[in-house]
Image (cartoon, rainbow, N blue to C red; front, side, top):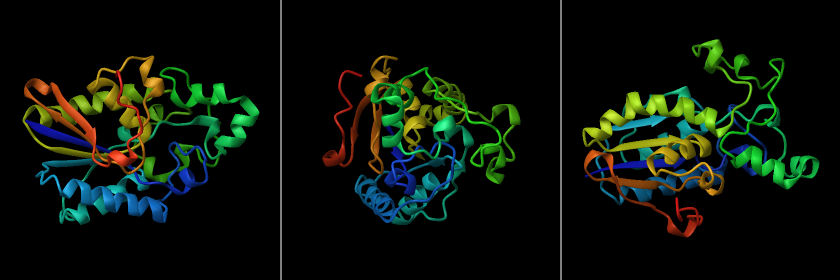
Length: 240
């Protein structure tokens, strides 16, 4: 029996400002750092010896993991960083306020862009100051892999090959894994692991800074799953 813990980064500056973030690099708020610290304390109580740590190449997820590792007294551990675990790209919505976009496009359309499986938001122009091609952190990503926008389906299609190649073999070897990533890259992963339908994934949301523990039995069959902070666990684990 082995374990996988998934954690969405703590609250970011643009989370607080209700702005679409996507591939833009923004840091954690004080609350976000506190969420990561508390997450580390919850994880520490489990007394799990982790064999590998994964995160995206976005600073909010990296900082969340670093705070957790500090709490676990594992701050010098190797961290595997992968752009494939990045948040989904919100295209032309990037940087815009969610409430203002609801007024402009309607609540229903924004919900479709945010939560649907295969409907992407409008694409970002390559001249946009927040286009990933302008970020030095992404200089080693093949240009044809840098998106102008993504649906959850697009995110799923980059997350899962990375998972299959780099993470799944470790889980099959009964290793314990901790992944710090983002709402949509983790939704994509949970869609596969928990066998969530395209219809149900619309209602599946992951709160910031709350560790999600998945315990496997043989052959990676999911035995149980839960949020470690049940007071902050949104009612999203029904009929997946």
